[in-house]
Image 1 (tube, rainbow, N blue to C red):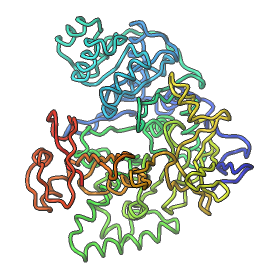
Image 2: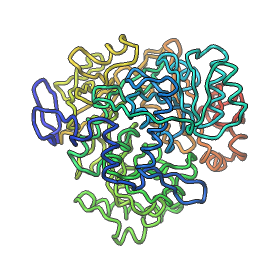
Image 3: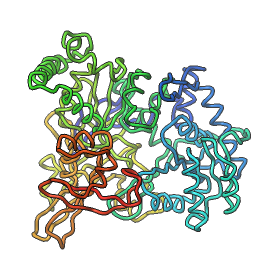
Image 4: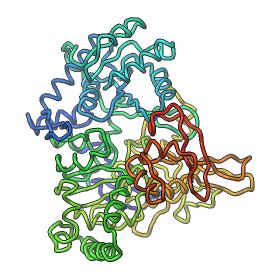
Length: 575
């Protein structure tokens, strides 16, 4: 799976040359612009991006339509004063949808750089990103988001913002609000055509701001070469494998002229979307896999049903271990066909990453869904992935072997008793998928990227006998409580996040205090049913407001919350 070099450096055995890291797979696809053009050449006028309204079939934009709209949008940006240069940053403030991809491709067509803005980062972080990246233009989906951006300008919090382009229709009042603070508000249709100006592999492609545990978010600068290198390695191992990170799977699909379907934006309708789309490849975070697993076993509501389900999974799991992956066995017909149908019935592959995945859950789903389930590991600073499950290895409890585009080594972390000589230490990555640095932050860049080009991830890894990597700890995310006890909050979070009514969890500690504090965001889908089993009735909103809960230990944490109950202030019960 991986070979050992001098100084404990390991690399994939899948590359063409033992001394050369893979930078690209196709000669005509070295930038993200060329990747899409290759897909256009293969697919022609075939379907590219799909979306749907409730209870309606998917509607598709063809590759030619996407290309034309991207060229028009990019031209409109140039006509409004943007320059076709990797120094020109364009903000995109929208939910995942076809227009997001069109906006991204518009930037790539004219060598501009995409800067995603996410609601989850919070309003302060969004203002910080706009100012730090000198963003003068933001493309957003909803008029409500445009109003938030205009409000920031009116308060002189983002004085550099000069233009907002909206995907959805908007009222004339928004134009007047923009005129009042010197911001041009326009729709995506208000464009002019200019000659394209494609980028080079060395040019910036995207700046992804990642939220840290402290301080302002860090702007990870990724080049076209970074992204192409990271997804090209997947062709080296198998042409159907793709990463679990959003930028990488879409690149793989485009490069082969495939199609991508978007969900309606409501996680509660995801199953309905899956049945309508009938996907063959499904990138997903472990949290959703855990939900699927819990839902399956909650419906097996008697001990006998659960025993039969586990028995069938073990029998099919034996087939998976021997390399047989299918959906037509006796066990499928009796037990698993409904589960497979709920995801469209055509899945060939699931890829997961971004958080630890339960070996029990992965093993069960490999059997129940009759498809390949891959696990990846990486971070934004190495363009998503640096290790990946090797095809044919369906064991769990590790994150796979190094990708052919990067080297991996472990370095000593003496203060935590991890030593590379014992096959344990901080995971370090080097290769063409490693980022250029943090935007306008040389100090934190130097902390993360050493002078030899090694990215220090902060994760503690361990080499297993089969050459795969297992993540076992974090280097810095520990603190000492007043009684001298060391705490690793991520370990605690990973345990409690499996609790049925929990969707997000944050654990905090203070060295002057003897106990921990946690903020828990409940799951609106499962909270009412879970509470009912505990003897508490009411809607999700009522339960969030409830300050008297019959738990053994309750801590009430005040917080600003616009997600769970839409009140200005709400109380979250922490168990």
